[in-house]
Length: 318
Image 1: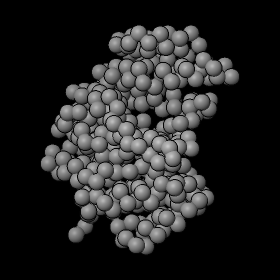
Image 2: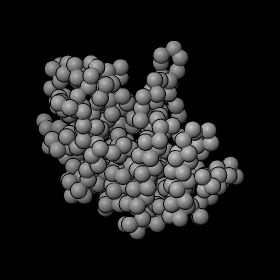
Image 3: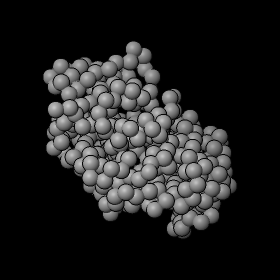
């Protein structure tokens, strides 16, 4: 029987985590999947782990880049090879929950929507050397709870807060019809693609179940843990700005307001605290410019608690 879904698993130097990620695929209650493992020229044992998995289980297919090309390009490499009705993503340091594919594919089979999006949790470092599962954050739940079928971004603007690639399963024909592609050479690349998905879908479904656990690496090497670096900050801010522009240019004003509120209440506070003590004044200027832009796009209507409002005001002074 042909497979229902292709899961694209990119990996670069994730040998400490890749086996667990692949095991979470093999443990799925929906078994008719295939996976494209894209080794992005790893310098550790990631490629060997991928190769061993492909040799042992024919559902795994290994593709190697001869030079590092980045996460976006690795995902695009996988997408170009998809031949199944559905596609999804799993980063090789994360873990799918056992029923993830069954739930997401199942709801799409019932509704005919373009994609389905589920909730996600975190794997937080825990001594000694382990990881603890953290409950779903409030803003994640707001994007996916309660279950909705056949909704749109105008009817459910809070969905715009779920900006990760690996919490969604899409119809392959939607991905291609909508012209979706991860921007090569960009960091935080799924923010832009997520807003394009919401903007271009005829309808989508939300699943409140946790479908994946995102790993917050103990060694701090995840890109999301590097925002003290000015270049990473600029990439982070650019991705959020570009995502807002996608929503705004498509006329999804309620989603713009929801996304702005989330950025100001969740993304901004830790960045302001970094900016207060950062040795490079360019860091503060970049953050201040970003907040002014966000405020103009919809921040004036945001409902902020007193603490967040003070932080936003502080950022506007940078």
